[in-house]
Image 1: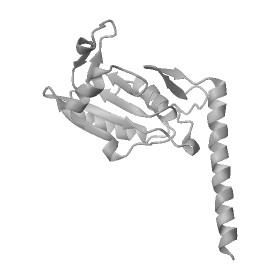
Image 2: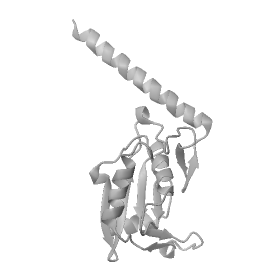
Image 3: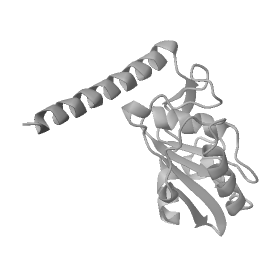
Length: 176
């Protein structure tokens, strides 16, 4: 991702697949809600080091590149936290999903959160599947309804059952 890519993302504003966080000196707690929401919905990009003035109507003036003070520290905190089962039930990220980009001589961290496969959903935080499962609507992260949560669990189990059935079928047909 380049500086121009960041500006291109910001030109359309926050949306179902983009979230900006000021995050100058640390990871904001709300980032984990967004991680869960992106993983359970369509995936998306979190930009750390970008402030959004929600009162500003002109998109050209709505976002300010504040940068993060210590990108290495924040990235280390990100990896330590995302690999802790106390915070997140599953880490979907790979090294290439987290980048530090120079924008206006400031460091912005771009985190690409992929959509979780059916068998990995729901992605939840704080060891609490019912209260820690989020979905993304428009530009906000919202607790999933009980119904949506149950649908994710059902779909996950269904996919696992289908995979097991297919594996058994392949093993059975291999015997011929």
